[in-house]
Image (cartoon, rainbow, N blue to C red; front, side, top):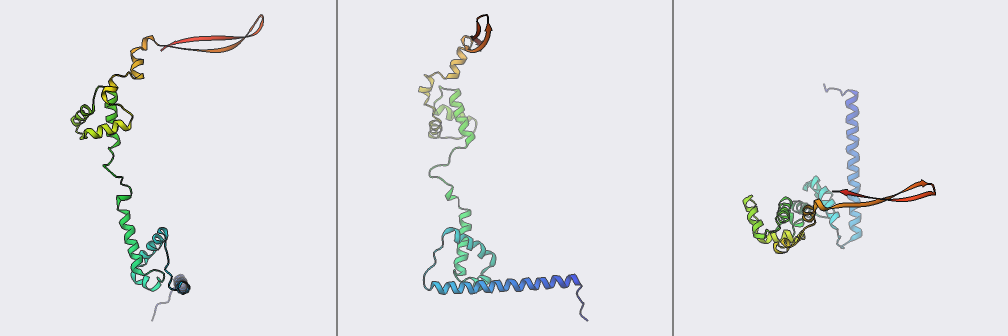
Length: 203
């Protein structure tokens, strides 16, 4: 004797059956709608942009070839799946993010090159290259020159002949005094007067 379903199971089975029937009717309608659209187009070829290809390819992959053969009418299953394979290939292809020429030097290494040049103004490209080699960083002389050029740092001869603002301050620190002034209103016997107060700061 078959086991009777309890009320809750009966309701769940009924709802599942109704949902399945509703989904099937929706699919049948969309199939028919696509057929009508294809009839309207006749032999004209549809043109899809990249975003439309991507959207169709993503949906097509989730359906699989067998179901696609039943529902796809605008594009063949083979074309849809080929679009999906192309999307996957593009995802792992770094060509779009690559730039021509050699890859840029790591930011930390660039900062080290700049620091060496600024703190040792007599060091040329080869001297910096040698110091980097001692720290187990392999950089070509041309790379060092390119880094310094991008940061607006001149070659060693020009750098060594110039005094930086920081060096000037360090050399003359004891002789530098800052001066400024402010005004203040003061009541005097002759009325309100504006006084000019000048002051000096020993840096």
